[in-house]
Image (tube, rainbow, N blue to C red; front, side):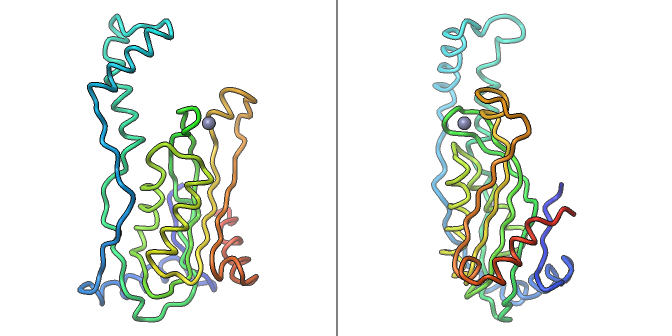
Length: 224
Ligand code: ZN
């Protein structure tokens, strides 16, 4: 499903986007680029050697037409999962004083479990109640993508997205709900195929105010 950005109080998605984009467009000069986490450098030659060693140790040496270039492919695939795409997380002053929830629903993501090096993937629902600054709408999905790239555990990913929004936007409230399937749980061990793990991080007003919290959680549960 495509990520959908919605606003609260019954405002249609388009209305929310239009309003926030207008707010953003009016303050281009005042935009600020804020920092993200450091990105690891990958030593490809060493990684390919190590994958080749691993395959040999597992009894499947990198030989023959199919496996000869497997170390190279594995390192390429892992690099895609470990290194986040670059983006500029620009924020803007909330000059229009927008004070309703901004929620991006069904943001797809994939990550790599740091316990088993197997993928986990699913959707994130991310919302905030603007304070001093707002974020370009597509950037909510980019923040999820950024923190999902790397070796992760779902609990930490949920916290990192919430922490970033809270600290960088001065948001009055933040809500993050992540639903994911972990291949380390569905393909091995308990083999709970299709089981989904749900984590949440609620901050500020989204945590303390029952009406705002219910509104955010209701938006995350919508099935459309
Ligand atoms: Zn795992």
